[in-house]
Length: 477
Ligand code: ADP
Ligand code: MG
Image (cartoon, rainbow, N blue to C red):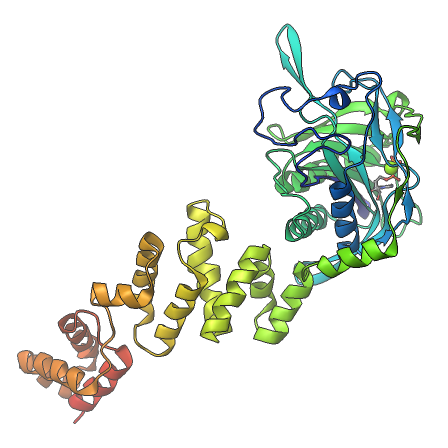
């Protein structure tokens, strides 16, 4: 039990792999599927005399993300060497940016439980990834395919206050990366990784507490869980009179615990200095303007537009804009259906449910946006009932056929023709004279029975509205 009123302070460092075909400083491929050490040249191997050359596309993608995060783009930024020894780092240093990063002082906004948050971005800088060691009992192996892969490290201000906010922030950064095609955001393949810095302080305290860095977190759920665990650990420490010391801890998701990896005393002095093999990166205004013009509408702006333009609830707008392709799909469907809320309902319930169930992306949807719009319109025009529509939807999913064709083929179209429904009702009433008498003498509960019989007679195709109208009129006459 906490005796004091503690508040947590969280800042995230997100590493995003830039979606280039070749590495940050060489023409080596970045393909994930390659065999061990296939994507290596003298540059990736760090052989003496090999010289790095900056990948222009990586710079452009970084500018793109920087602009989307409302950052200043430095006209002149520099690469620096971050020196440390590790077997998967053959050069003995990682090329990164230090005191002159490409992007600085931005912010990002997102909603948490309906409340808008604004989190500062301290910086976003380019760097190269290291290789990967794997350990096999008595020996270890090194794969340098990742060595030199371009990364953008996005550093938030210490503005996040809860684990939930931190996870939502990370989701938002991923969403923007994906909207821009700057990074595929694939957490399993390691194209996005997240380090969480966290400290606690008493509410109202003027200064931050000592921070602990959590590494090795590979899902948003674990961001939340690791932070929850770590905050409680820090509170327990403080309340039992212990001090928190600055350290790096690893999160073990199977135990849901964090473990000390290295303390500040063991922390590296990286001896940063400007890399003499690389020129400064110069980005002129024309380049920045060109990139700015290429930016798509960003997810939050799009969600807010969905609310105002289509009068959708915020809940719908945020879900529909989670992925750019989904938002595009929705807008295409609405263009045809002119029924935003009905279309949103179909996308959010049936379509997303099926996509989730079959682990499909919206781009693999067997139902085109045109066909979905057609279905929405058929319901609107009462050509089919909502219940039939669900059946038709399932067939559309299975066959990719248009709802019009399916309704015809399945003989599902709704009967709205009054004279036809009158015939059905009369037939049912004639066949159930006793029940009609009982109904008329007060057993009104029998109404449902007649509806059921008439529906059965029409093979489920009678329009419920018309059927009710005629049945009521007949019974009560
Ligand atoms: P370092 O020099 O250790 O890299 P930085 O000041 O660059 O530390 O911050 C790294 C990350 O940690 C940033 O996201 C920042 O917002 C966050 N951070 C800094 N101080 C604190 C603190 N006291 N508590 C929580 N997070 C912090
Ligand atoms: Mg730092």
